[in-house]
Amino acid sequence: MLQKIKYLFDHSTTRPVFVIGTGRSGTHWLGYSLGNHPEVRATVEDKPMFNLSTRMALNPALEDKLFKPLVRAYKWQLFKSAPRLYMDKTHPNIWIAEKLLEAFPNALFLGIERNPYATVASMMKHGGVSAWHKRWREFPIPNRFLGITQDLADRYDRIPFASQCAMRWLAHHNRMNELRGTLGDAFLLITYESFAHDTKATVDTLKQFLALKSPVPIPEVKKDSLNKWKHQLSDSELADIQKTVGFSPDSVRD
Image (cartoon, rainbow, N blue to C red; front, side):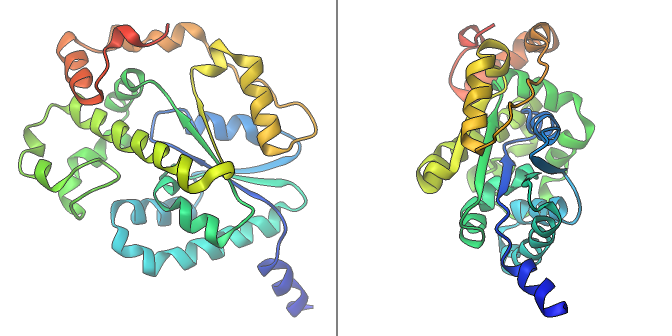
């Protein structure tokens, strides 16, 4: 009996879906929204997966030690999820996506982005997210998670906070573009704003990508909330973000 359970544990055909992105970009919201689907079982920032992934994102040298425990944790989640699709929102997995695909060849990766001005405004108000920028000295440089290069380290403390958050957004944005090539058809990138502006097309794309039979519940996006950042960011903060990401706030769709 134990051997049978071990075999099922190691050879589960349940498909994992990893929701990835940067903090405050809609990953949490997307994980909970899709987790309500009857064909999906979801975990959102659950232990030990979230802690293991975050530690590896901040310190790549830990991958040799922590990746195998992460895989074991996911195998247990897959075992518990059958016959449903298993979706996990552990957004730092963006930095180990290729390794996860190697460990789970049938995995799918669902990336979500939000415009950098809204993302940064939200980061600056969220204590848990912004705390990483204060703790940056605790982790190796370069820091892919925060977007800190060796050249920036000498002056990072003098960089405006809005710029620091924008650097983090940009690092994840560039990583998303990289994953388009390395993950191929196993990767889908959507935007938070698309749920408000192109709701049906976005929901239909998700349904097809995840191979779901029943309709995807339409997540609620309050359109007036999309522009909150315009009232939250000062002119100097807007300028700092623009200088980092390379495009003006005027180019962001309302």
